[in-house]
Length: 226
Length: 68
Image (cartoon, rainbow over all chains, first blue to last red; front, side, top):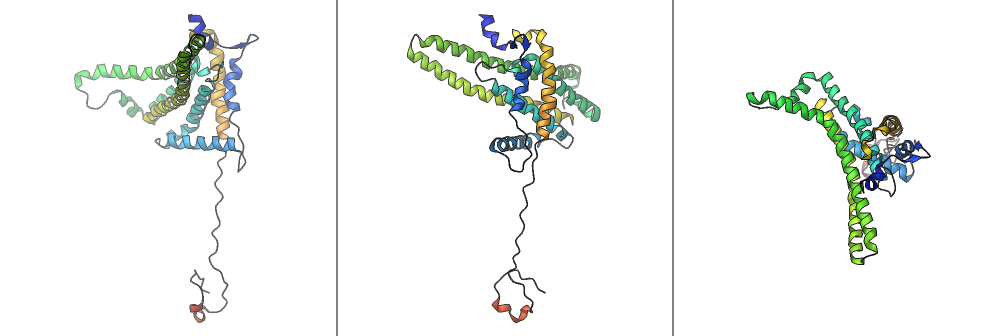
């Protein structure tokens, strides 16, 4: 039972070769680049969306933080397209793999921390002690703040993995339940089918939201450190 | 849980790095946001008046008239 549920999260192999390679690279194919003054509709929509997202996300940063805008934009586009593509039936979602999310989260978080330590050393170290703490609590609070700092990348990665995995798992379960119920009674089938439809809509929202949250948190860590 | 099977971690990470940091960024860098072509301000002057305007002041329409 356990093995059956999780088989959609195993790495796909094509004749023994890892098929992950084209799967991860596939979302980049969906973003055409064209340098015309007036593009076709797809390119125009994509460019307008990217411009909207850039303006929304990078407005809170100062000049130094805005040097990260290319990185954050590629991050949010990558995660959003990968998550949305994973909602197609029988597809493999790379962002449901802990390996990939850790490899995304740790370097980005480390980059923000190192930026803060390099340019604003005292100020970034001062984040460890909130204002107005009573003196006896200071050592314990520094320890707690350090732990909460080091848990940030792990939380980023695990949050994305768990959300996507849980959503896909839930869709699998309710889908198979619908299939089983279809031979038994019609009303339960339609109820479950409706549940599945609603869940799919939720999953689309979750796909986008998770991308947003990931990028937002990285940008927040950046804001603290620039 | 298959996500914890570390044998596949290396290939995933190795292919994600260039996909994210190289290809996505190149795609975004190659989008060109052209400045919308600026409109030329149309000249509001309708006539070229070679004579002195004070002789015909009351007969000309109310425009931004360039005085010679």
